[in-house]
Length: 58
Image (spheres, rainbow, N blue to C red):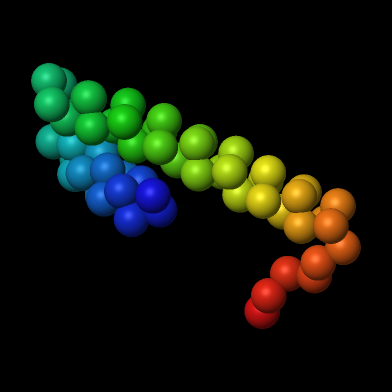
């Protein structure tokens, strides 16, 4: 899922340079949604591992 977020983020940056319109604006919106989903899943994962007593893998 992170790969998709990064892909849409890159498309959104290119869209910002060219101006947000049409497909570019949609790509920016999708990038935001996927990014926030990824952040929420990361936080849930960290909390569940902390509750189970596992330390993060380095």
